[in-house]
Length: 313
Ligand SMILES: Nc1nc2c(c(=O)[nH]1)N[C@H]1C(S)=C(S)[C@@H](COP(=O)(O)O)O[C@H]1N2
Ligand SMILES: [Mo]
Image: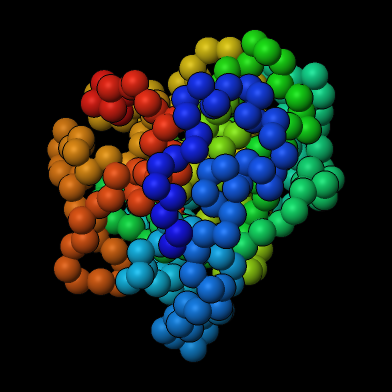
């Protein structure tokens, strides 16, 4: 991975203008373009059924290898389908993520309701391999396929008053049996500051391992923010709304003393009930040290310059 001596995105540059730099300029400025190992250098994951990992690795260490397909798709959280790690794969089997409408609204010049195909069509679909760190201190390396959220937001043309983006999951207890329980408030909601949302690492994922997203991973469209804890990666999104105030997010509503808004991976700030200094990589025995911003510090630290990361957890 190519390390730049210092991050060229200073805080004064993370203004609305820099959000409208063209995509190549922004990727280059962020040290993202041209970074990474040779695509295809990743060894074939174990297990005869595993599809080959494709795409460019982002923020990976030399010993990071894509987590096998069976774990990426068989061990995850999606409370709309149950609270055990194996529930989503089992109970989302019959979910039909088509037809699918995505509403883009709020403080934008161009709001609209889009059929998924039309929503995706103007954007470039990319494969990118990212680290993934759950707040529960397990981690994976996931080969995502998706589009840049920045692309979608630019097209919607946020007004100057827009400061945050709020995302909402489908609310349909007939199709999502977990929503018949009160384990969380439904629908699941999440949020990002607008400059975080515009950051070129952020994806709206439509697939893993070069295939369409399995239902349990958030079909047909889910958020991926690799420097934040996994719960920011809201699944099965039906609405993207630009707002002027910091939106509430589901885990903050559920346990505000444990989960904040920012939720940046931070080994120095423990969860009140466990350490965040280490993580268990799914498929490995020894725990690994957790990296600041999940290994994306060089890219994203400047988004938070001057902020107290203990206060803004
Ligand atoms: N709608 C919704 N999105 C969700 C969740 C959920 O319960 N509901 N769980 C989150 C959590 S805690 C994690 S770690 C990831 C896990 O899924 P993944 O392995 O497919 O990323 O999804 C996130 N997105
Ligand atoms: Mo998580």
